[in-house]
Amino acid sequence: MSELLVDFITSLDGYASGEGWPGFWGLEGPEYFAWLGEQPESTLLMGATTYRKMSDFVTGAVPNGQDEFRPEEEASLDELTRAAKVVFSSSLEEPLKWANTTLVRDDAVEAVRAMKAGGPGLLSTIGSLSLCRSLLRAGLVDRFRVVMFPVITGATGAERIYDGYPDVALDMTDHRTFDGRTQMVEYKPRLLEHPPLAAPA
Image 1 (cartoon, rainbow, N blue to C red):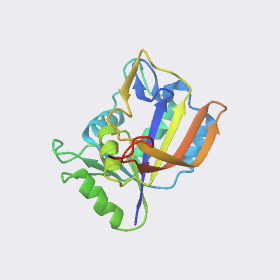
Image 2: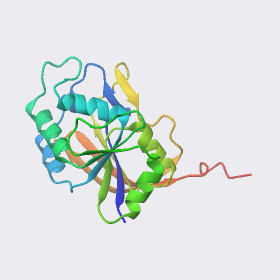
Image 3: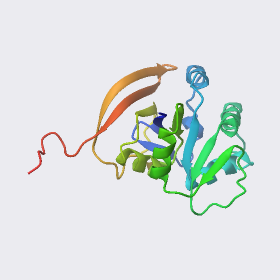
């Protein structure tokens, strides 16, 4: 059976991006990039919004406020292009412009359930906040990983990650610090039917 990893890159206050900030908030470093290069090959899962944004970058668009991608960002996009990808969408049309991407129109939760049962390997999300939330609610997530960059984007942050999540207990399985400033934490998630002090009636 495949493992499913929900994988987020966030500001310290839990935003997925921030208006006017570069990729990785401009704080990526050599230790972090080396760790990224050590990650096992996985099939990337995403929704239509993330697909549109990322595929636009691959075909020449750059984030607002940037004239061009930095070399590190270009290398990261090249790696994503080479990876196997699955996008869940009822609105996208084939042929897809991003190489190595398969379009799935079926219900994402049931499709991922079938993918997990189909054999060994690693499935990993990229962005796609609503998809990740649905997969977690369905109890399909084996690993929940967050890389927190040392910024608070209270004024400019976009895409609050955890809004709408159920209550979840997290048992830590790994943690690391990169370049003396960026923290990675990884957990095994457990959905809670109720908070510890709110026993069912």
